[in-house]
Length: 338
Image 1 (cartoon, rainbow, N blue to C red):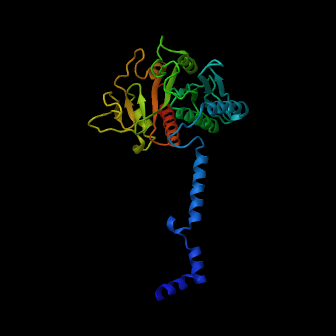
Image 2: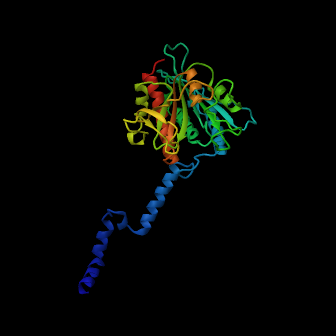
């Protein structure tokens, strides 16, 4: 008892209080409760400020919010001198259930006098890229990633050097995988099977020859990956190398394929490398698996579907899609054939 009283008197001494006040707390439990709550609230506010769309594992953005942001983007392109001819155009009818927009960012070329639109006299043609998003109504994360890429390209004109970027933005108000008429847009992009929404998407993508087609999606698989229309060899591996290995979809080398746990009877994707997949049943035909990619492949030299894992929060999904898309564009520009 006497020892306890002596210890309390020593701790209550003013010198000891000063020493405790200036000594940093090494562990969170050593800090006062009010300070810990304040730190937690500040970090929470920072997280909300960094990603303002919604809580984890929920829909990242609504259709109304997407329409407002596209209108704001159109206003920005008109006023921002860094746009350099970038345009936003609605392709679908005004009263259409699904709004389809086309955003064009012309290629730029550097010069001593400043940056400007790429001239026709330049010898090397620009890399023509088409990026489509929100094809499935329950995967709006692709739209958020596409919008971030557009704003990044406007903020960093250097990245637009020798690239003509076209974004096909579909806004889905229903949030279902299929359209209201029961059609899966990723299965009907073939001649004679398209509905009105599919025709709007095809018209927004254009008919001219393009070099790279990218379709942004989200999947229930436990890792992000890309699906290649054909075996592109090291190019696909270079694209996937932009991601950390633990965030990529992987399988046992002896198996070489990944079968979804909820679909044991259905063959999944064949993985030639971590994060690089092909579909064994991907063959040209009406309504075949991935006919959206087949349709884009008839126009493009390279066609990829980028899949972000829904096992992570939306902020991480957006980050993964943006990183994979930028890697696909940059590596195709540097190592792809044109």
